[in-house]
Length: 161
Image (tube, rainbow, N blue to C red; front, side):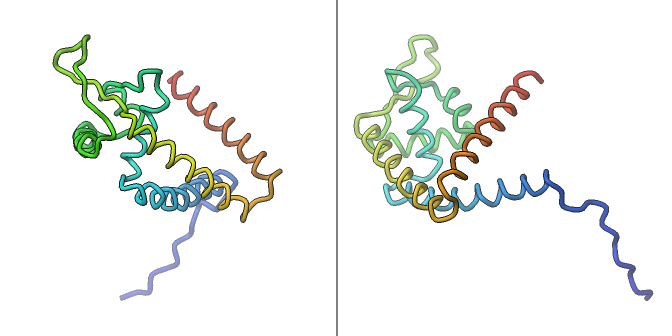
């Protein structure tokens, strides 16, 4: 059997691949750290995202399951399972939907609101400490500005397509 020739690689790392790679690696590290914070409160990271979406949606802290799918990017079956678990823990309650008798609204309870506030406080502290150990303040400010600009531009591009 003849010896295989080394495969030539046509793509070499460039700025774009370094950005994407860095974003994914950083996201995974932060995701793992933040998931551990949520777990200490007895909820999964995705359950926390549901609670957070409800907390910041409107004065009634109420959304439809469809709105929650969009806000958390969860599947409908995954959302149904999460909502059951959150309801059993007393963190959300299900209400009749006056605009659609087939659907039920989801509302954050006082207990759920208190928990999401505690988790957010802990996440802010954890991530502030995490980033402070890695980047000086002026670099964190620049990075935050660049990421906001990047996210806004990508969201706008998605709306236009």
